[in-house]
Image 1 (cartoon, rainbow, N blue to C red):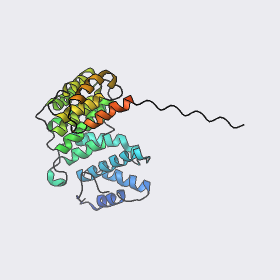
Image 2: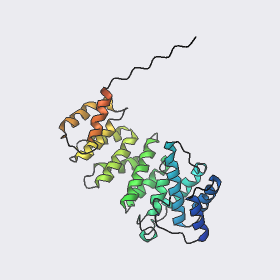
Image 3: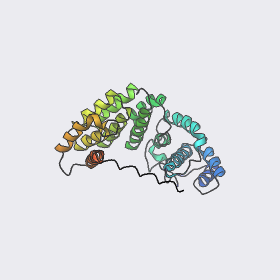
Image 4: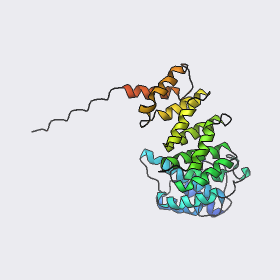
Length: 266
């Protein structure tokens, strides 16, 4: 693998180029970790970005049962990512494939599951000033994880997400990301925003809000609203309308009885 956001970019320093070759190879684990740290700790924005991309890809594969060889350095990744996010966005020429702000995209990508409540203000700033859709989308995804793990949602972050989710002038993709992130908060204010979004003239926004309200811990309360929405939608309503219908159908399916225990053999 080369890199998610730095595809086609080349490292000028020979030692960093070699470290990247090792990192992207099936080299022994210890050698890959050493190469990863050499890139991560360098002052080269491309090298740092490549290291962060590799970190998140390795972390994402854990759901397939493999471990992240770089997880022992997660705290350092978070610290460096925060520093990168406080820097100006990198110029488009540095990463032509991604465009402006590839450094921010990589940093956000790396902390998808590492960001904490204290990062809320930083995320607000990134979302507000992001000049490319990719950076904003990744920031919105990270914001959802932060709100999900926060005992009390940051009011500034939640307020910005609500504003994007309900603003019909915003890009639909951004609104959907913001809706999902808002729903992660599970606060009264957040849920009220989802309910308001079910009245949006855009059926895709309605359906996305309904899908959030169809979550296991919310559906009992909001099922009547969801059923009214479903009844109002045409048969060819855009995705995720079918997912909303399926969510309610699955609720009505009887639980399968437990298999009886096999008798002990004498």
